[in-house]
Amino acid sequence: MTTAFADVSATPVADLLSLNGRQAVVTGGGQGLGKAIAFRLAEAGANVLIGDVNAEKAHAAAVEITERFAVRARGVAMDVTDSESVRAAAETGAEEFGGIDIWVNNAGIFPSMQVLQTPDTTWEEVFAVNTRGVFNGSREAARLMSGNNGGVIINIVSTAGFAGTAPGLSAYVGSKHAVRGMTKQMALEFAPLGIRVLGVAPTFVPTEGNMAAAAAHPRTESSGAMAVMTNSLIGRMGTPDDIARVVLFCASDLSTIMTGSTLLADAGQTI
Image (cartoon, rainbow, N blue to C red; front, side):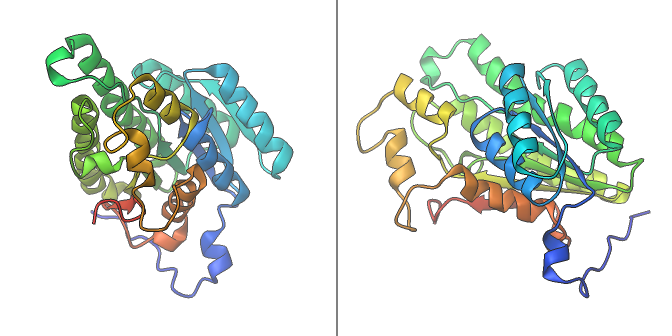
């Protein structure tokens, strides 16, 4: 039996956008894109649990949120490749806030290495973080949401989930195609539980992690990471907050009719 999602047609826009009374988890939320997402969700009224492999950064981001917004925030250590670590963080969030309504699978890595030079360990690490990490997070989110009136899971995919990108990113592109497929399949499986699943596919934006990776693996001016970032139809590079606002849309009741889709937040890159 499929749960009927609420018809919010008569709800004012301000209420559709509001996340007051909702509880969110953001993985990889200690910096960059994840931090920007956590801030927008908090601004909209959600209490936020920030999970990050770097516990110090997670705690610092949570302190910033509580100082700026009238919500509760908590930073915890979370290794998305470790199902027990994800479960412990999820249970902390549920106990701290009284449940989980929004889960954002943001944590990811993208080492650049040509296929012929890629060892098994690098391939496996990319899929462990980018793909198994999404599975681990989604499973825990659904477990908690299914007993708490449903919710929404948002997977950060990438334009790499739609097409090949720069040379050296075979593992990354494969992992993100997998996440896009998982988004569709989980939407099918979780709909009867009252859970929507959406993906957001950003273009390459200049976060701390992205810029460090670009610097570590420079390419020619025409094919490198900076070329991807500047190949934009909107006349500028994207920012972490550009992506965070799309995630906010997915998390809110503005997107209630949507599940299984992956929204391109790519400044026209994939046209």
